[in-house]
Length: 619
Image 1 (cartoon, helix red, strand yellow):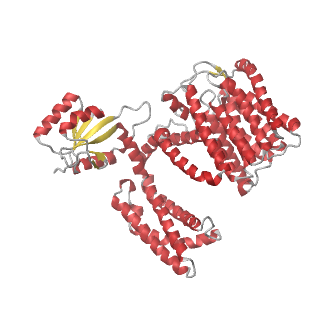
Image 2: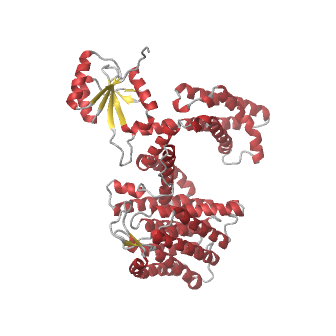
Image 3: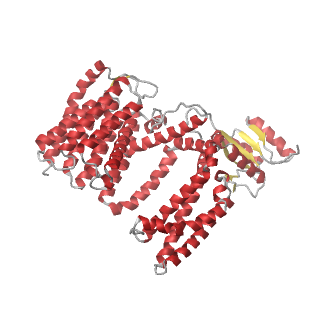
């Protein structure tokens, strides 16, 4: 209760400042050329005043001025007067960059340079981050720079719908404020309240249909504010709070940014290999989260509400974890599994599709053939070395398994050398894993298990007075994690190929996918599938093999080669109509009677009939 007047005062000052000055700026902005004209990426249809973030900047700093000089003169908190002076100067520089960009549309490189200058200026003037996470001055500076740039550009990229960026920043500010209150830092919570009031006041004019836009001026300022507040107020207290600012508080913008970098980077690699460099990783596209929801048929306001809700859930999980850490751990694991499923099922379609294109095409590049040994060897060595430490930590219930880094390095040869010898002996590093078979994985697993038994023997002999029970438990855990990682990295190609097989191309300009039936579920049908999957992996999305047709009653309603046997030739017409089949592949020899019937059905149903032969001929 003792801080209630301060809370009300700071919130009221920022809110009223924005509510009063925003209508004036709406009338004044067009005279300065600060107006956004619609283009193909925009979802609005009318010219709208831009750079409304200037008023958000004003409201925030006016509230801070009132807080430090009138409402709480002996201010107590990490975000002290020195921080505000440094942030005022740094954010003013960033405001200038944003205004220039909103008016003249500067290049991404220049904008990134301006963001970097503002972040470094804050770092040097604030004098707070030099010992962040135990890092020295230089590495602390690099960490702070990357932290600020990540969150600034995350909010900059998400600003594509009326009220979206300002609303997400409002939710993020509330989340940080709650964390600071629970941590006993009311002063830092008041700074968050200044930002909350500014966002809420601006949202009154920015929500659909928007009378004014934040522009890069506002989106960069909001990202910079949240980055700086979380770093300065959270970084020196708890590492959890520091991480929460990125993965909880800025959840939706950060996820959207990571997806943008993912898909653009892969497309750039693919275009470069085809000598058609037209993709800019730092450029713009129309495949952000809000664009995808709009393309699904939702209204603009509904999309905004959905993303608000997602961000609220993420922020709430972060707060629950902070307050009830042990109770929330299990719940967070369940939520992580659910979130992973929803991401893969509904959000990551474009990114996974582009990655499957990269895997199917780019593995033919000589670099993957020439350096596959070094690539796999480096991963295996790094993964197993880390798993030695991880398995020891788990067995010892969280205690450090080694007294020093040197001791860990000293023991690694006993753990790794026998496994690597057997992996080399089984030709693990000379196999083309994208064309691998069950036998290849069987010998890989066998090499790891037998090698770890030799490792266990060496370790027991080298430590005769050690605890054998703990060592055996550790080697079992080490085996599990090693098998998971080493076999997992070699199945990535197959995973992405399977994704490509069962999911249509999500790009709007992709041709419609053909539905295919394979006649013959025996060995010839399996050979056709193998040939199709291996030799035409980059075009798998163009067709979908729905299943087999086979006249053998023992196979019907069963699964073979991963596909269902849907029926016989007498069921063909019903199956074609039900599954909207466009093409039938005849993979085996059939009687002339059945062939004649098959031709009549394909002509009647207007579908394509093709024959695939799997035999050798003399030349």
